[in-house]
Image 1: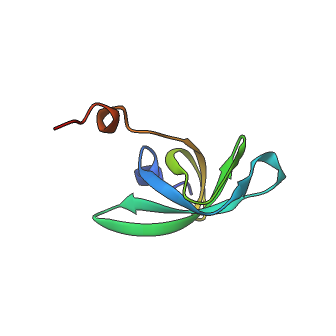
Image 2: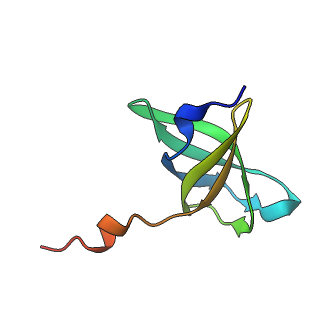
Length: 77
């Protein structure tokens, strides 16, 4: 059963993904904490890449894409 609550959450790659060649691992901010998920991406993503979860495959496996929060880019003091 897919975990719908994780869709739309942000996180960071902890173990690089290999695109269609294999999954990696991400640490996702969810439910007031952080949880790890097995992560698939269309293109390889290196460790430290900020991601957005856009789908859940169930069983703590998600589809992710590289993400930069547009609000962070506009922050200045």
